[in-house]
Image 1 (cartoon, helix red, strand yellow):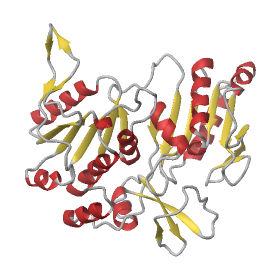
Image 2: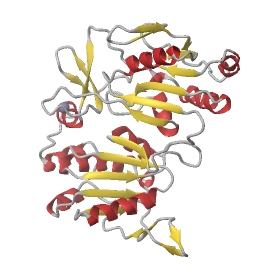
Image 3: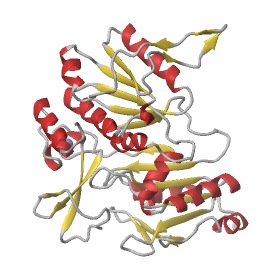
Length: 357
Ligand SMILES: [Zn+2]
């Protein structure tokens, strides 16, 4: 399936212009939209008093999905969107279905944070749905200092096993590692992977615990690395505490967790991490014949029937429910019940769900 990209960071517009030039040079048919409705896209790249990277949008952000019928007829290869953080959440969702239904690459450029340090709704929806979330300059934060990283993936992406390998590896090098996990998970104090590896969590975090206070203690204790399991279940405040520990004490922190729930929406902790952390995707594969990368988590009854409502957290207790990690195609078709190969039917469904008006 064609991919939906969300690109953020400094130099977005220059990257958009450059990407459009490169595509066109290769003979590709490119559509450019600007969510701020200006009739020119002008990058900040200015040489000798002249803006050298500029573009004119050739489509609007109105009726994004419906334009797909025309794009398909015209053989459009890719849609580039400037200022995507200014879209509505529904427009963001339309970009996703445009990409998957009509087989058109979509690259949305936007800010992860607004002036208050929060994610704009469209940026969050795009990050929830995107195959790839990446900084345009390849670098999230300053390379010389330690990072707060979020290693995210769907279920079965071996997140916990990777955390445990990392801990083992760091300790082998003589480094001191602290492991952290939220208390919401079933086995209270153990960090356990499916393949049988486990270790005790050093810090188990209750729903309203604060973490910043640990900073002084971690420094005194010469802690070199903090590894966090199931980070999606931490609160936004707790993630901000980790960010402050990382910043103030220069301790690298790796958070591992799910990006989204069974309805493709972020958890509180993963939403905050998507907004502020360096992001690394961990891959896993769908069970379907195409062996596509799995992007979404589906909740189902043990008899196989998919569940599309209910509370965000319902831990797999091995009896009533189970989870599948699915590619977009399988998720849209089998969980959302949308005939992805029939654009008219997709449009009907999107109208019924009020994503398209
Ligand atoms: Zn699949």
